[in-house]
Length: 194
Image (cartoon, rainbow, N blue to C red; front, side):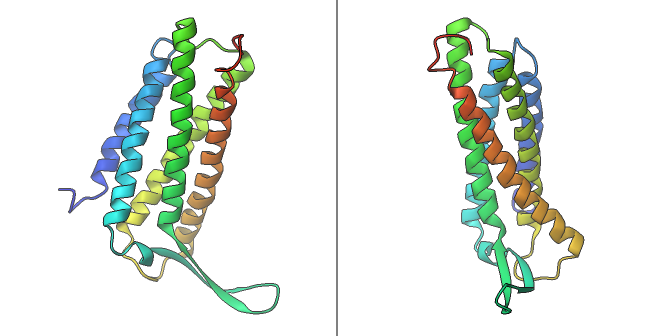
């Protein structure tokens, strides 16, 4: 079944991600939610890496922009492999989820809840929002990668724009996730609650 429908495992992971995100929005199940998100992100990162490694046509799955003039007047063409952004986004998501689960487990062991200041709670809320956005963009891009025939087949301008928005969105939101989780990790070294 995975040969016919390679995207089906990501649909299952999406259902599990939705459940895990719902757990993070309840104070009593928050620590379980972050742990589930970490485990699911680990599975997602491994699945993406295996799909990219197994795909012998991965270098042909590019976004192609012909005839882009530069400042010197030379017309160049730009080829961007889709898998670059998949790897970068999933690794940054994995790192941010690891930092967040370490921080949340420390706070839970210390205070028996995730007790933190209002500003750190805002960072946590912003982290969850950007994490969800990045996960959706990664799912869209992995669907594109798996369904893309490869090579320089003609894509409509709208489809190219969607892929470029996913590229930019993944880099921005995954970088924000690492920033927010790094800010939250400073709670481990502090002697107060934030």
